[in-house]
Length: 289
Image 1 (tube, rainbow, N blue to C red):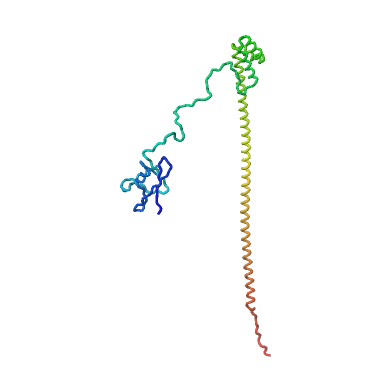
Image 2: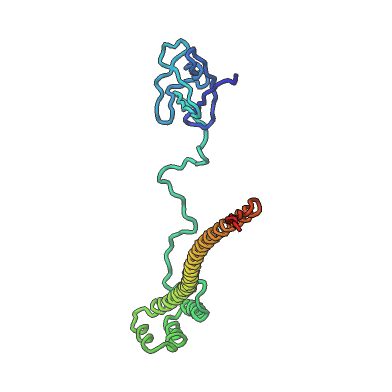
């Protein structure tokens, strides 16, 4: 006879351990508590799902430590202490709580108000003006610098911008800020253009999506129309079947009438052939003369 077993596993693992069952005199198969202890040293409770089993018995059948056989059930066991594996669990590293990683590429520095280096993507005109302006402000003579700035950079500007620059107490700082504002405007224009391109692309995608949706709606309408036509055809087929049944019934009735008539004719023919036609004989009185 095949050996009966019961499945056990530790709650921390998925490995199944089969423990042999003992056959009692009443025909029931049970497992002894000692068998569970040998398979799982230090075992404490045994659970079936979330329910703790409280009717385990030992081999002496006295202590409340026995477990009846449960088909297709894996019982869970817990031990008093499980050795912990060394090293990080699941590949995680020990990082102190609240620790932050340094940000690369970030540094605090004071910005020179005259540093008007163009950012990548700025216009070539602003870049050439910035370089020339840096070369001018390095000259020793302040008047010479102001005169050259006035001649090369301020004079070609619009009158209202010239008034704003000349009214500033620090013409160098004002002109530097003017150049920076121009660079910012170019950067904003570039970003706005990129954003506008994204909006145009999104609009095209929405139009395509609407077109696809219209196509789907059209196909659904066609499908509904086809279903209606199929329904009408089915009704027509059913009507034709009913007409065929009626025609078959009428045909059967006519065949029955013909059969009865043929039967009558056959009967008459048989009687004519089998039975002689009766003849009538008239007896006349004898003539006395």
